[in-house]
Image (cartoon, one colour):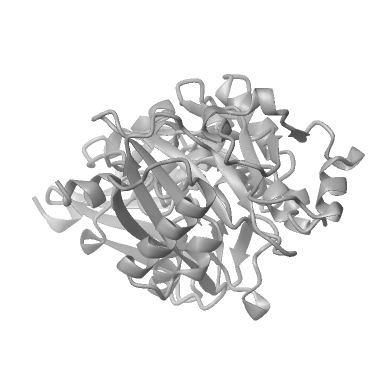
Amino acid sequence: MSQTDAVQQIHVDIIIIGGGIAGLWLLNRLRSQGYNAILFEQDCLGSRQTIASQGMIHGGIKYTLDGVFTSLSETIADMPNRWKACLAGQGEVNLSNAKIFSDHVYLWSGASLGAKVTTFFASHALRGRVGAVAKPDYPTVFQNNAFNGKLYRLQEIVVDVSSVVSALAKNYQTAIFKIDWQQANWLQTHKGRVEALQINHNGKVLTIQSQCFVFTAGEGNEKLLQQLSIAQPEMQCRPLHQVLVKHDYPHPLYAHCIGTGTNPTPRLTVSSHATPDGSFIWYLGGDIATKGIEKTASEQIAIAQRELNALFSWIDFTQAQWGCLHINRAEPKQRHFMLPEKAYVKQCDAAENVIVAWPIKLTLSPSLASEVIELLHKLRINPKYQGLNLLTTLPRPEIAQPFWEPIFSSQT
């Protein structure tokens, strides 16, 4: 067979690079609207940032802990409702096979709240989104005389992230492929426009031409842009040092702890994850994760132990196993390293058929997909091609394993 005979030309509408929830959500939206869209992932679906999420689909309340609305809190206010519709099988994507850990999140204080925050939570603006919990209705974890703080219930859900990835992937699994970048390269014009993604596979060269290329690879977006010599947009990373606690306490908790003073972010955020051996893992984020990025694992664990002993003095953690996880939250670069206020979607000036996207938060994945589709319409990129037959021999990525498995498997 000659080299010419070995080359196969394939035409699609959209190529998505990056198989986290943002990319998978976008794939679902595009294919449901008739686009011949395909997705490539170099690792496992949901790996890195997605699988490391705590799964809280919040509506921005945690960004108002100083008693003031912010642009970000308002941007994501309706996200829980969009997700709930999808989880019920009645929304923009079908997540009816995904698992919900909890239909609410608690917000608690270790001491009395300031009058400003108490008044704010009781205000008309938050009616229906936040409600004070009476003592008889406290969840088991707070039913102890040693707890003397205030407790609120937020109308926000917590999802099993792995099951969401699985549900999104299953909907259009024939359009999802694994890519080995050692066997792939880009074809560009001298003006920078991306003509195709070329893949060497089984002795053949697959040249996949696309109307548009969308990068949803999180931290990997930076490398993709470098491959194409695209300087803008730039990326920033917001590092976290999360802590994991494996224990036998049988009651799950999904909650934010309000710190003292006017800090607008949670002192501690706790999510719970059941393990096959019957234990629970409490996954700790919040200020402890953002302030502990320079700490060693042993230092970070010591801080977490002090925090949990102070906040839950009635729970025995002496037999618990501890671990840490470093993760970067990838974002578009902002002045003064500010937190972006919404999902980021931008057409690249240096390559007009490349779109770069970061969801900023897991909860904003639906918003990212909507913004990409709106941009495609503005660019007059409409469904044009059909068929994926020539791609069926390409490998398929697996679903990422839970983030705690490699951490605690090494301790057994």
